[in-house]
Image: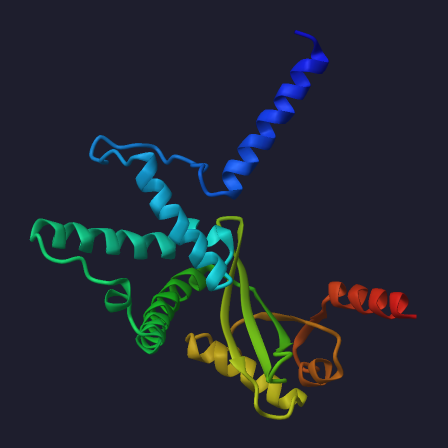
Length: 240
C-alpha cells in the first residue's frame, strides 16, 4: 500500500470518528486506575452519563473540566451512593430536582464551610508563623464590570521548609472611599482577624503604584509591583 493511500485512509478514519463524536454515538474515556471493588460499567452506561454531563456544561455554561473537579466528583459520588442505597430497598428512583439542594441552602453551606476552613487556617498560620521572621502581604483592587462594585483582595506570603507559601486571606467588598487610610485599615483588620498582629510582625507590603496605596503605606515597608507598571506602560503605548 502506498504512503498516499495510507494517508487517505487515515484521514477518512479520522473524519468518521469525528462524525461519530459529534453525533454522540462515540465517547472518549480517560480511565482511572481500576480497583477490585469497582463494578464493571458498560460503555452504554458511560454514554448515559456523558450526555447529561455535556448538557450540564452547555446549559449552565460550565467548563468541560468541571466534571473532573474534586467537588463535582464528590457530589456525584454521594448521588451514586444514595442511588445504591435506594436500589437495595427497591424504592422508586428519586428525581434529581428532589435530591439536589436549593441554591440558598448551598450558599448557606458555603458560608459554613468558609468559617470552618477559616478557623483551620488560623491554626495553620499560628503554627507556621512561629518560625517565620518576615512575611509579605500583597493587595489589589478588583472591579465588577456589571455592578461597578469594588473588591479588595489580601494575600499572605511566607516560606516554609524553603518553599513559598501563599494564602488568599480575603476578598471583600470595599464600600468606603478608596483613601490610603481606609485601605490600610482594611488590610490590617483582615490580618488581625487571622490573629496576625501587624504591629508585631515584620511585614513587607506589595501593591500597585496607585497614590492611595503609596500614601496609605508611607510608614510601612512598601514595594511597588513592577508587573502593574509594565502593564500600564503597554496599555498606554498600544492605546496610543
